[in-house]
Each structure stands twice: as C-alpha cells, then as structure tokens.
Amino acid sequence: MRHVIIGAGPAGINAAKTIRGMRPDDEIVVISKDKYVHSRCMLHKYISGERNERTVDFADENFFETERIEWKSEVAVTGIDAAGKKIICDKGDMTYDKLLIATGADSVIPPIGAMRAAPNVFGLRNLDDAQKIRGLAANAKKVVIVGAGLVGMDAAYALLELGKTVSVVEMMTCVMAINMDAYAAGAYQKRFEDAGCSFYLGKKVCGTGTSGDLVTSIELESGESLECDMVIVAVGVRPSVGFLAGSGIEVERSVKVDAHLRTNDPDVYAAGDAAGLSGIWPNAVKQGVTAAKNMCGENVTYDDIYALKNTVNFFGLATLSIGINAPEDGDHVEIREDRRNYKRVIMRNKTVKGILLQGDIRYSGFWQHLVKNEINVSDIKKSVFDITYGDFYGVDARGQYEWRVSA
Amino acid sequence: MKRIIIDAEKCDGCKNCSIACMEAHRDQRGGGLYTVDLLDPAIESRNVIVLDRKGAYTPIFCRHCDEPECVLACMSGAMHRDKESGHIMYDEERCAACFMCVMNCPYGVLKPDRATGTRVIKCDFCANDNDEPNCVNSCPKRAIFIEEVV
Ligand SMILES: Cc1cc2nc3c(=O)[nH]c(=O)nc-3n(C[C@H](O)[C@H](O)[C@H](O)COP(=O)(O)OP(=O)(O)OC[C@H]3O[C@@H](n4cnc5c(N)ncnc54)[C@H](O)[C@@H]3O)c2cc1C
Image 1 (tube, each protein chain N blue to C red):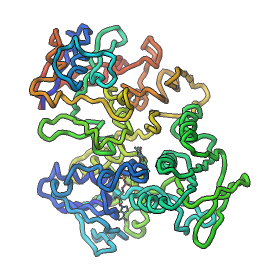
Image 2: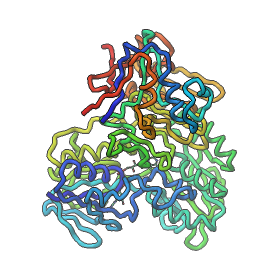
Image 3: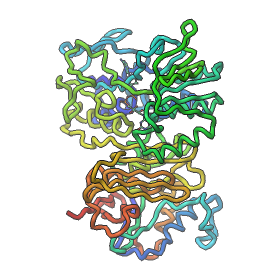
Image 4: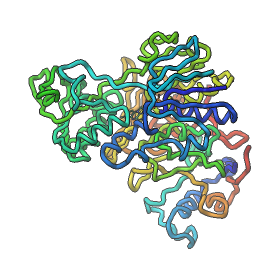
C-alpha cells in the first residue's frame, strides 16, 4: 500500500507517524513545498533571531529516516486526478493508493492599493515568508503590520525585538479581539507600547503610497498615513486548496470531509487547516492522527472538534481563553482580579461557556473539559474560580485519571 | 510503562510528596526534606494535593497518559514520549513557552514555572535518579506507589 501525504505540517507529520506505527511495511511519502519542516507558531522567533531553520523544527530528530518515510521537499503539488489516483507535481507526477491532503492554509493579502504585487509586503505563514521578512528587516526601519490578531502580534513582537519602529493597524477596537476581552487585551497593548509599538485601533486601511514597486506608506480611512519600509499583512488565512480544482475532490471554502475526515473519494482524506474544521495546532495534530487511522482501515471519527481555545504569551504575560469571548443576553459574567491576575468567566445556565485567565494560568487545563462538555457546575458550593480538577476526581484501574461528573 | 498509582483514600494530605518533589528538583541533592527551601521558586513541586468539593484530599500527579494531550498540543516538539521508559518527557531547550500543553492537560496538572514564566513544570519521573520517584519514596501512607501498566 502506498500512502501519500501532501503537507509536512502538524497534520501531515503526525499522520505519517501514525501510519508507520500501524503499518510497518507500507510505503509512505510526504510531499511539501517547504524545504524545512517547521512550526508556524515559532516563526516570530525565527524573525527575531531566537531560532534558526533547525530549531523551528517540531518533528522528532531524524524523523524521516527513523520512520522510513520518503520526504519530497520543495515539491509543489499542482493538481490531483482522483479518478486516476494521480498527483501532479511541478517536479513530475506520482501515484497513490491512499491520499491525505494536509496542505494547511495561505495568507490572505487583500487587494488594497499595491499590496498584492509589492515585493516588500508579506504574509506570515511559511518559513520562507519569515526568511524574506528577516532578510528585508536588515535594512528596514519602519514596519507597518496590518491586523492585530495572534499572527499580527507575533510579527509585531519579532520586529520590536529587532529594534524596528513598528505600527500596528487593526479594524477592531482592541488587539487580539477574538481571543480576549478589551481589558485583557489592554494589558498586552500596554506592554507592546512600552516596547515602542504604536497602535492604530478601530482603523481601516484604504490604500498604499508607492515608490516604484515598493509600498512606502499605508493610508488609513482616517486620513492618517503611515510611512513604511516593509508591510506585514495578517488579516486572515484561506485553506490551501486551489490545486484541487478539477480534481474530482469536492471543495467548498476548504476540502469537504465527513466525520471520518474522508472526502467524497473514499481513498482521499483531509486534515488540518485545509479541512476547514479548525485553525489551531492541537486540532491539526488530532485530525492527522484520525485520518491516518482511517487510511489504515480503522473506522474512527474525529470527535474533539472544539477549537475555541488559545493561549497567548508575550513579554512574560500569559493568557488562556477557552469558549466564547463575548457574553450574550442572560449570561452571567464574573470577574476576579488582583495586581497580577485578571480572570473572567461567562456562565450560562449551570455551565461555563467561556473562561479567560490572564497572569497565573497554572493548573488550568481542566477548564477546557468543563467548557467543551458543558458540565454542570452548579452543585459545587464555592466560587467558580476555585474549581479544580479535584472536584471531578477519579482514578481508573490502570491509574489514568477520569472525570467523575454528577448527572 | 511504570506509573505512579494513586490510592486517594489513603492520602492524609501531609504534602510530603510535594516537598520530596521540590527536593528532587534542586541542584544540591541530599540533606533531606528538612533542608528544602519551601519558598524557592526555582524548585516548584510537580505534584499538588487539592481538596475536592467535599473536602477530601485528591493527589494530582502527572499520569504520563496513554493519550497524552500535552504531546498532541505541543508545537515545538518539546513534549514527547520517551521511547525507552514510555514516560512523557519535556525538553526545555525545544520549548517555545506557548503553554498550549498547560491548556490541553485535561486534569490541569501542568503549569508555567513561577520563577521565569518561560518553561513548563512537568513530572520527569525523577529520571535522573536510579531510585523510584522521590514522591513515592516519601509517602508515609503508601497512597502513591509504582506499578507497571500495559
Ligand atoms: C505565525 C503563526 C502563528 C501561529 N501560532 C499558533 C499558536 O500559537 N497556537 C496554535 O494552536 N496555532 C497557531 N498557529 C496555527 C497553526 O500553525 C496551524 O493551525 C497549523 O500549522 C496547521 O497545520 P496543518 O498541518 O494543517 O498545515 P500547515 O502547518 O500549514 O502545513 C501545510 C503543509 O503543506 C504544504 N503544502 C501546502 N500546499 C502545498 C502544495 N500545493 N504542494 C506541496 N506542499 C504543499 C506546506 O509546505 C506545509 O508543509 C499559528 C499560525 C501562524 C501562521
């Protein structure tokens, strides 16, 4: 059996590892445009110089050799012929018995002014984006970042570390608005400002000023103009599925998959950001593992679909947020705060719909289980902030913990 | 794989296990529990005992899980299963301090370190010792003990 996996991100790598674990003798091929296996979540540390090509790798050492996986790096897939079980690549075609599409997502650069064409405007998704940014940063002084979500803030952090003059433009009225409330976001904004960053919040980009090919300023609807030597656009991503046009594999915004992560073709699966079910690392890993098991003939569904969760850590301040971030009518909101900590919980009926912890996030992993399983906490007679896993404590025969939840 | 089995009924909350853990993670070994500086943030305990809703002691120790959510969530490769021992180990050098493991541990065992906020405090099964984990050795009630699990 020949398994081919397109993509060497967390979904692809973990799928390959899982298949090898189940099928010692099958042939496994991983194809990637990337030259280096890398964790996108560490790209800002590459730009800042804290890490290099080798230390942004997340796979086990000598992964491909040890697991006997053939890795075709710097190969781009340009099309699939599902009926003929063929993969069309820029460096020759290939066949497969089982195929996994784990191509992730691409940065979206909006068609504003010269943004799409200019050689000094970048997204931040791949190591080669980070390489180009680091390269150009050597001679750049002023950098504008469009978008203050997690990726934009990663970029801002990296360029501040390099001593650049950084301005961040964001349509929402606070930074990382999807991940936290304005109060928690303010704590980060202050730390970034203390490091020299300027923010233009609640503002929209409407154009660019140019000199030759280069964007030399970002124009805001407010009339402000921000001079720049380089622009990083972090306004969102789109599943990387363009190469599937005409392949016979059904695609909407992302690859269409069922609960087994199988596409309309029974031998083709998708996992990770390309499958459109999530845009975060842990879910990409689990989807890769699930798809791989099914490719090996098991019959497992992808159940841990919860994706409303994230952690942020900048300038020594950690934040964890799980669940909804904006209370609705009728929700009950509680806040606990001291000099170093800010905690907010959103309660609905008897369950926790959202938890936000900033500062001390020790021992907090159990919240995810509480929120995603909508566990009734009304029978615990203490402040919701004092709940721990101990309140649901149980140990099974093999010494694994389990959740004891009253009906 | 060896696992620390917990018999919570036997626990009387003395916290010897937590002090023993601190002792095992300080640079200078030896001297016994009574020489441990309980306020030293550099040697935080990997385990903790908390009270449940009825006031009973619940010892919270890393399970080195069969399906380790911390490993599945790790985006740097720092959290991994040791091929020989089967234990889930943490490589501080590789860690990028994103704390996704802290969020994904379903039992809330993991935490960022208090001293620097740049690494994760995680049970290493006293891997550098030849003996059983220090917490197990120090429990006067045998509420925690080692068993081979398959
Ligand atoms: C800057 C940044 C920071 C992030 N921070 C976090 C974070 O802190 N926490 C978190 O949970 N998530 C974070 N994410 C999101 C996380 O990185 C993604 O969810 C995850 O990488 C998705 O994994 P994947 O395997 O689906 O795809 P990817 O990791 O995107 O990998 C896709 C792979 O497919 C290959 N590929 C794509 N198209 C082709 C083609 N046509 N031919 C050949 N190969 C192809 C690529 O080369 C690559 O190897 C961050 C993302 C970015 C960009």
